[in-house]
Length: 51
Ligand SMILES: [Zn+2]
Image (cartoon, rainbow, N blue to C red; front, side, top):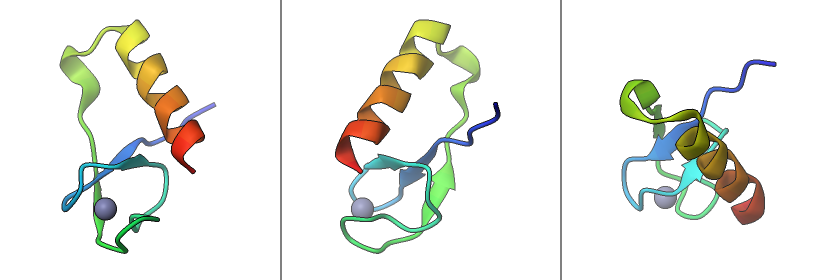
């Protein structure tokens, strides 16, 4: 599985979509190089919850 987690440039909402579902601003890919696997997993869980 390959998910590209994205982040709204306006409200910092995490999503998998190209536009923020809350404010319709563009999102950009996050760069999780420095995050641990646990951190990434937590953000995926947050994205699921908020969508
Ligand atoms: Zn937003």
